[in-house]
Image (tube, rainbow over all chains, first blue to last red; front, side):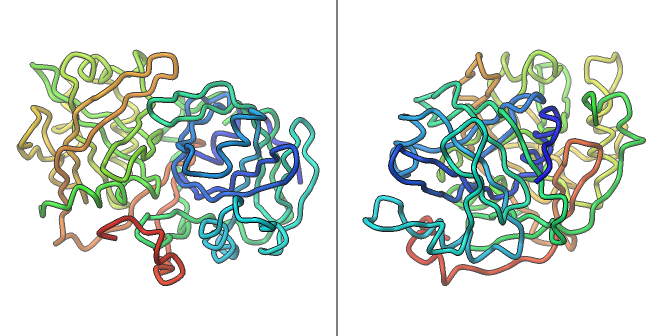
Length: 182
Length: 182
């Protein structure tokens, strides 16, 4: 996995892919599937909507850190499966159950997900309690540049998922409005 | 345009499409292109990241209402064009400039965008100032069910846009976790 310029990490989240949130509560690793994310700043600040209804929320509160891992279309059934079981169930190791490999992170205890296209180590900077928003600051971001499959998934919320299709380039038309480095 | 069950409106935003935000400041209509949105609740509560750097923010503050309009892939150059000019410029009528047609909304002064796949009339319920988050409650949502082109766009943030590709059905695997009505 290749380290990315942190100022480009927002381009991993802006298109709206379904992501996995990797946490470690001090005893166990866990993964959850999340679609409710958005970018807050070009410098790698993200919002995540979650709360006590997700077991991983406890780890986010206790450790104030996580990894955002971005799966691709070939991982659809792992993404769905992770979303359908809870880390609260005794003995559930979602990495083992779904054939995913941990890779050590640099700044957080939560593991990276080796099979994912990209991983972003994050620190929680804020809990906006009333709206169930967790604010994350990216610490380091990686991309697997050797990966053949790079198409991500977009959850619709009705049990269907849309995969990335054709990519249109409008860089020329947007010159002057692209953030530095883009 | 057909009225949707409000409890399904979140499925328009969850996949992460680029959207147009339509406002009316009491004198003029305006449109802005936004990618930084997310769902906050299944009942049609959304977050939008914007602030004083967008001219439309003044109208959001003053009127506490807007329309979220969802364009499709055939509207890519309108989406880019709207993002590249400001309603602050004297005489800019983005509807006229980009060949878009207003349709009257029921609950807000801001117009719907007739060419869009879907429109959601919204009330601003909260400004989370520190994070530049505007919280929106959907009042009514519409979908153009006669439209042939239904593929939405996902902004990457680097001047490229990804269009919706194949749609996978995982309803059976997700039974029991889908919200009511889905």
